[in-house]
Length: 568
Image (spheres, rainbow, N blue to C red):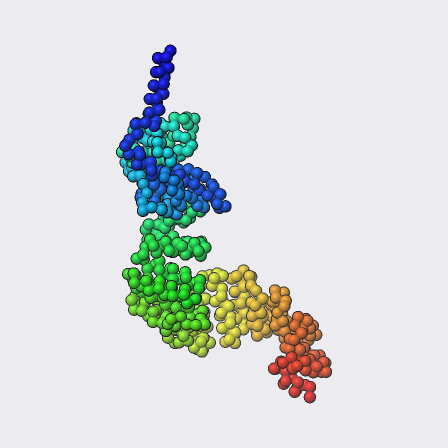
């Protein structure tokens, strides 16, 4: 009986040794690369805990995606007890539950595992390294029961090994001490002797691309994402982030781009434009100027930097600064634009040159620039509109101005879209200036259709002016009534409505409208003058003269002639 008991004890000892004893020599060093991970939610409450391990000495690491899903921040705790924050997500694969990330290490380098690039076949012995701060903890061994191909050339392993809950995402090693996979939870009936591992090289090869910006699995992690390694991909990522990120976050992304690609002019140009859009203080503009200088220093194509600098200086001048920064004048902007054109004669550079000349009121030179662009890919409704406005300011005949506006609208998509609808308003005003109220009225109607009737009180007021000049009195009355409905406190609309009523002989109605205007603004001198005119039409001379006197008392400069003619 005693002998049988001793045999049983010996058998148990041998079984224990198959799991934790006879560890390869590399285990002691390798297990130092394994760490614990703690993730936190939006309220900075602990979200989950798990494991992970370093795959390079600079802090690149792997773990399971489930641990990071919904996390806003995370920290790792090494086998030595050192705590370090997770700084960037480098990639993820939700389908196979892996995540790759960067840890902001507090040492020059950290212990790391070498990722195996050669898959293992069924029957091979593997070792699982658990996280532990205890020096005597070694590893668990087992065998590969099945090696299945997953996507590309990667392998998914079924392991003959017991996996405890706290061992998920620990490294599974081959006999040579390379990390073969990440341990994963068992699924199915046999959870005591079987577990799984996804290939470590699959997890290590996860990366951020421009398309990752809209990746739902990455969006579910609140920790900042790395920029793509390829510069062109990183630039696309920057572009997408510019409209989606808050300013502070986007500014940090720009800093990371410049640190990653210090020889890229695009980073400095984008940071300069970003800073310019948010402040025109002297200190911020000094940083903008410094970034522009640095962009020019590293740029292979200098013309793009000259162009961007010209555009920023031009926009700075358009903002009408109270004090001039450095030599940021229109002349400097023009010189930069011409340097860009001299380096590469692109239409967009000449367009900017024309815009700067227009701002300097050198309309003839601006028109010459615009005219050259009509034979390029920049020929557009916008260009034709710029030409029309330039001609108008040159006091060219109305026929020339309107011919350009006709070409502008002819070049627009049909039916006219809301984006192009303002050109109709511009032509309507130009037609009014040319004494063509009926065509102008057609443009106002076309604009109304183009924007689906989404207009304001000012639109109705301007269309009424065209209708009145075209002697469409009922339309004028209807538009003014609509303007007043939309903005009942604007007394100018009521005075205009009174004018139209006087024109059509409705003097009593005009007086009523003017009384409403005076109820809103008792100091409205024009209302008294117009009331006097209506009262004259009704043969109410004394009342009219009283109204004229009140208008004069309130400072109406146009009433003296009426008083001289009717009240002496």
